[in-house]
Image (spheres, rainbow, N blue to C red):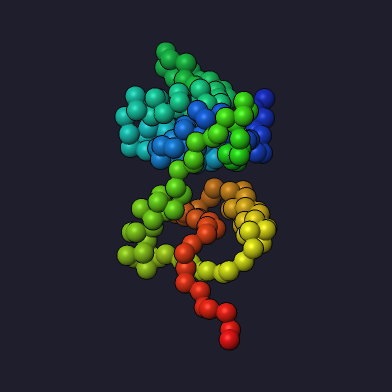
Amino acid sequence: MEDNPPGHELADRMALTQPAQVRALAHPLRTTILQLLLERAASVTELASALDRPKSTVAHHVAVLVRADLLRVVSTRRVRAVEERLYGRTARLFYVAPQGSSGEEMPRDFNDFEVAAAESGPAFERGELWGFVRHARIAPEQASAFWQRMSELVDDFDRLPRSGETTYGFAVGIYPTDHPRLPPPT
């Protein structure tokens, strides 16, 4: 977050170790709120305006994120006769731990590609979508090493200053498939 109020230390990374934390990320509106708060701390009123949603709806989703320790109040300000809270992320990057803190199995994260497919449709229609799908028959260790490199690229993308007029989506993933393969040479 570029606008980091004094006394608000933003962790670089935070492992999600509670099922409620992963479930909190499962709603697209909550992930959008988290993305907006990468730019700066904001009030429910500002978030509702940016999202074109009722304040009550946004306040509910902010409360879910606060209970999951993904957001916190980073400052307050007086607006007329009301004390308005500004919310900020607790970490720049959240990731799902393979196992919860009490040993329980963690819920699955939402399908990022489903979100990307829905968001990218209009860009595809306008000829503004850049994308690749590639397939390679490799060992699981190679897939893991490649994913680590992609994670670093995602980290670079997340750290870009929020300064342009257009918001770009960036989707990356690696997954096993049933893609056809040639028989061994004879």
